[in-house]
Length: 169
Image 1 (tube, rainbow, N blue to C red):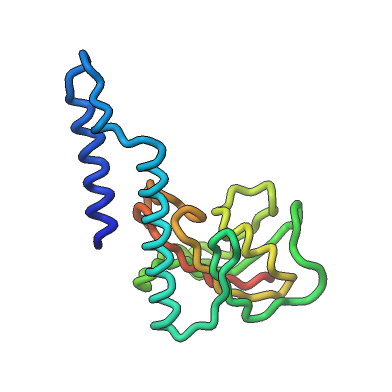
Image 2 (image 1 turned 135 degrees about the horizontal axis):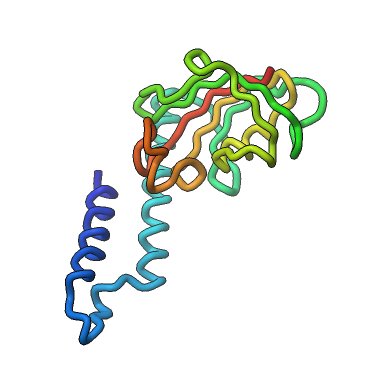
């Protein structure tokens, strides 16, 4: 909840700076690189806390990559790991941390992609590369690895943490 107030305050500051006099720049109202970096670190830390709380509530044994992707490999699959140019057909369930379902292959049919060629959330692309054909996993994507600040404009809101349950066919 606190991060929403911080974001609201940030945008209020930006909007109010647009109304200020153009004769003299007011540098105190314009956030600099340092303030933006601090805000970004704060938001990443808060997202991580939300994810860890979700993992604890669900009693999951997940791991985190150095990039910030959380994963639980249920079944690695067989054969070679997926790489660029591999055509992948997957069943999936995409939801928010509160359990709200956003998209699923039950509604939309299996997703067919070509790794490295199809536009995917960076976290999902990274996660799929941990699997082999027949593999199954749970991935949690922080906003910066999913839809970021804008969301997807449909079912995924701004700065949403996304939970993907996937099974490779």
